[in-house]
Image (cartoon, rainbow over all chains, first blue to last red):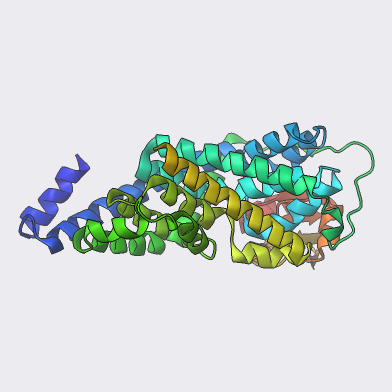
Length: 316
Length: 78
């Protein structure tokens, strides 16, 4: 229905000819931006509202009673439903260790939380549908669980630069009572805040996508990101690591690239690398952990993400 | 009354500090405002999501940029 409305706007009101590259690109641009921004608003709002019921403090209390392995799995799962921002990575990291949660379990959470952020989930649902979103989350959990277990096994506790004093006695999270109306308002404020931050990236991303959609030949994309290039996955992963705040702008591009022959595994690797690892986060973490630990953290996750890409390309 | 803002220097923490200053002025109460940036001190309050707001040693809000009106309510409720 929305596509028909855009057709009317572009071909009848603006009187642009059918089948021309410029009118097709414009049609695609209007259709995609409005669709994406609308669905983003709905999904981010829903996710944020749901998340207001889970606090990191409660998760910490729960995880502190679990052992390794079970802890890794649960920490990765909690990473989906708790809110996370890279500015709170340090208090979170130290807070977990304070509660005597093992280092590996803490890392499972630290990998999963940014990977499963609300923008990524909303973008995936909007552009690729629920199947790809579920696959992304599933493989993301796998990377977080295995990555955390590996880091935990390496005995890197001495690489933490700040002495963490464990909390004495029982760990308890204070219950904050929030009325439902406040939750609704907070979720809306937060959604608006995010949209305000990303709308320009979305426009640029869709604009670039529309250009590729209309002008770049499919053969060109296939030759770089298709099945014939064995280095597509590592290349996509390494390209994705330095991008972070632009995730919202990159995803519309990936949608177009996959429709033009980029393999889904390569696309998944790219998306995961963008969200899971960010240079600003590394800079922040440098204050509490050694470069060696950060390098191992980034290295493990990068390899895990590449593994997911190859695995996925091989299956499909 | 002593109000502390817990935050490691993110933009939301600075915004909360500003909002708190306005809220104190509006509430007409006398309060000392202090920004706590030392991570170890923040950890002592058991707060993991910044920014946090502490009134007289009690954590009243975490991980949220409160509006001026909300802070006024918290000050009055205290």
